[in-house]
Amino acid sequence: MLPEGWRKVALEQVAEVRTGLAKGKQNSSDAISLPYLRVANVQDGHLDLQEVKLIEVEPHQVERYSLKNGDILMTEGGDFDKLGRGAVWRSQIDPCLHQNHVFAVRAMPEVVDPGYLSALAASEYGRSYFLSCAKRSTNLASINSSQLKAFPVLLPPLSEQRAISQILAAWDHAINTTGRLLENSQSQWHALLALTLHVPSSNGAGSGDNGGYPASVQPAFLAFRLLPPDGAAYH
Image (cartoon, rainbow, N blue to C red; front, side):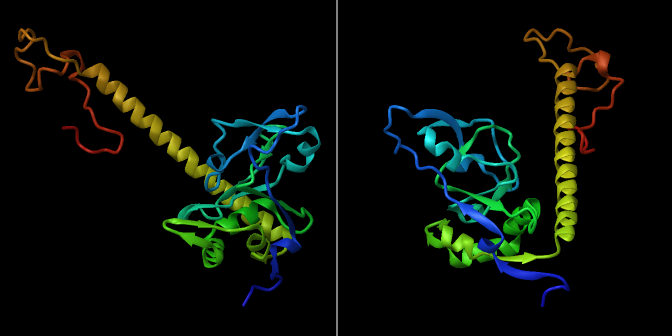
């Protein structure tokens, strides 16, 4: 039973599912090269834009395959854990197209929030639906546009969708920030370790009394108690 004010509708009732551009089918001399998103660019909850390749497209097709701000990018298939993964496009590159293995779901903004819809599709609820109807082979699964259009969207009032989307975005930001802080802490620890330790000379110089520390520890740094970022003892 759904909460009061919620309803369940097919995705095609609240969004347009757009297929992408097939590579290698542009033979016109007027074709131009534009950036496009591949499956590798669409990760679970975010986009990896470090390597965006170009694709040839005829000028009259640019509008048809161009991404718009708020489009939800979803992969057609791949490994089981990648099925239905996606993220919201925020016009990071303009213009930018998408290939035929990446769906662009264009939500009706007056009905559904893109951030909420993307999170729903990536949730256990969404993944269960996609796996239930996917075409499977060894370790791989794929869905087609008809199955995506039939995805049963759990639709709370728009204000609740936006609130849910904002909460999830805040959590994502906190998780990413924590990850960067941990990486920075690890980098500082290794830098300090590199400054503190040196390789002893082969002739044994400097191998006298070193306060009980290994010969590789510089005496000038013995005042420091070296602990790795996680607090584990240094060995």
